[in-house]
Structure formats: structure tokens, C-alpha cells
Length: 454
Image 1: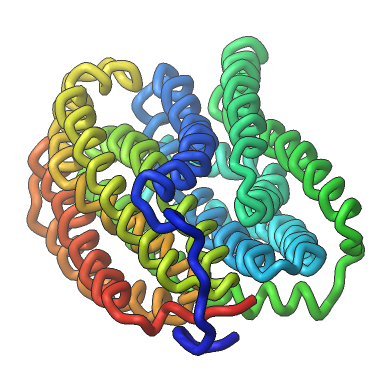
Image 2: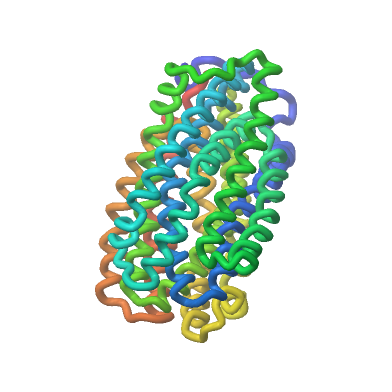
């Protein structure tokens, strides 16, 4: 790779105009939005189906789903690092190399998923216990984790294959697969939970089977593209190791984020079953909103990676500016919807007045702080697309150090119910996001992240 500015770039007339860049952003972001929204719909469907089984079941799902999302989320580098690597190679004109990197990333994903499936089955009970769950809540959480474990290889392959397609600037295929998957997941969950009488285990099993089907479909798409470009389908030790090296800083970055989320769940658990159940509702809707905002981050990843691969520094800056603008505006709109709808949305998950009031308070806080989240997610996506993983790893550790004392203070001194959940989300969506905004914002103002070349 070469440093910024060493190679002059010839710009196409009008290539840096706002409307032109906006068209490219939304051509990627709108399909990505559909795919990303479809993914948290899996959690929302699980929450709605399981919530009508009882408060203990919903609280157990809250613990289990957060643990599983942590396991899967730690491996999101399989998508992010692959998107950055493939988009850079495509920008530099190396299509065969781009697909080869993608295939290697998918082999790594399959290996990691198989190992994590075994780990989840064996250590699920210990993890649930470590978060402070007892009695029926702990039993339901362990049941869900073990039923979901067989789907972990599929979940990881979905991440990697989606990253390949994003790097190729194809966000429509993941949208189609995720949309069909969301519909299938809803039907299968209802059939297994109520039709087959499997309870919460049916919800976990249904989601696992759906993810395996999605992985198989996306694998076929990537394999066809690799064959057309002459890339090998065999696992290459060197290529897999390169994926590990490139992804490790993003693993650290994601680990810090997921630890913050788990810490938030642990605090909610400490505040009681009602608060934990309400937290699951707020967390599910926050995840839906966050993934929606991440659509712009994904567009930024692909476009910035492509621009830097082509040594087009000005274009990378222009993409950053436009994506930030749209990220904040989207955050405002989503924030208004979340803040205003909490009281009416909560009963869809659990018809309990205590849960409803607490969820409404948490969503009001989230709505107020969502514009800042839009800013943070876009900056995160830009730096990932630039391959600036090492800085993001250090920044992630720093922001966790800032957030942890505040979260622990909420657990020690906040009351239960609506006030406690509002304080908890003020710490997470407020203080934690402010720390992320500062660290990523300062980096984006510099030119250190703008390294060019394939």
C-alpha cells in the first residue's frame, strides 16, 4: 500500500458532486438497509413469539439472545474485513484476487462457526450463570442457546459471504436472501413453538435452521462468482491466515462493543425480571434502528474501500461527508419514531404494565440520542472500509473503559422499573456513544486512515 497523496488521481467530471455520490450511496444503502433490518427481525420475531409464553421465557430469551449475538457479533469482522479487502482489490482492478480473498474468508467463517457451536453447547449454562440468572429464567436461557447452537456455522458463513458481496457492491442479493429468511423464520418459529409444542427450544431451533439455509444460498452465489473469475474454491492456509491477521483488530474492536452490551444486560438483570424483560424490548428495537443506520455505514465501507484502492483520496473524503450528513438525518427520523411509539409498541412483546412502562422510558432515551448514533455508525463504517482496524481496536478499548464505571454505577444505585432502565440506556446510548463519537471523529479529521492501494 502507498501513503496518501503519493499518486495523483484524475477525477471524472462531476464525480465528486453531492447528488452523484448520493446516488451511489443509496444504490448500496437501500438494499443493505433491507438486509440489515431483516436480520434483527429474527430477534424481534423470537421476542414476540416467546414473549407470549411468559415473562420468565422472555427474560431467558433476553439473556440467551444477547449471549448468542455476542458470539456472532465478535465475528462480524468476517463481514467487515472481507468487505474492505474485496472492495480495495476491486478498486485496484484485481477481480480474481478479490474473489480469492472472499472464498478464504468464508472457509475461515465455517471453521469458526463449527467451533463456536460446540462452545455454545458446552459452556452455555456457565455463561448464563455468570450473568446472574437463576431459576426458570436460567433454564429457558440455556434451552434457547443449545437449540440455536447448530445454526452458528450458518450464521458465520452468512456474515462472510455477505461481506464478499458487499465488497463487490452487490447489496441486493443479501437483501433478497435475508428477506426470504425473515419470512421463513417467522413461520418456522410459530410452527415449532406452538404447533410442535417445543416452547422456547422451538424458537431457537427454527432460527438455526433458517440461518443454515441462508448460508447455503449465499455460498452458491459466491461460488459462481469465484468460478467466473478463475478463483480457487479450495481452502488456502495462507489466505485464511491473512484473513485472521486482517480481522483480528476488528475482533478486538467488536469484543469491546459486545462486552459493553453484555455489561448492559448484566446490569438490567440486576435490576429485576421486569426491567430485564423491558430491556429486551428496547434492545431489540435499538438493534433494528442501529442496523438501519448501519446501511449507510456499509455503503461507506464499500465506496471508501473502492476509492482508496483506486488511489482516489478526494472521493473518499466526499463519501465521508455525504454519508455523515445522511446518517445524522436518518438518526433524527428514527429517533422521533422510537421516542414516540414506545408506549404502544411494548404490548406487542409482553402485555404487562410494568414491562410496558419501563420499555417506554428506555425507548424515549434511545430516541433522543439516536442522531448521535447515526454519526457514530457512519464514522465506524468509513474507518472499517479504510482498513483502519488497529485504531478502531484501541478506540474500542478506550470507550469501554469510559463506559464500564457508569454502567456499574447504574447497577449499584439506580431503582428498578422505568427509572432504572432510563438511566441504564442514558449511560449506554449516551455516554458510551459520546466516547465513540469523539474517538472516531478525531481520527476521521486526520489523514492517517487514508492509506491507498490494494
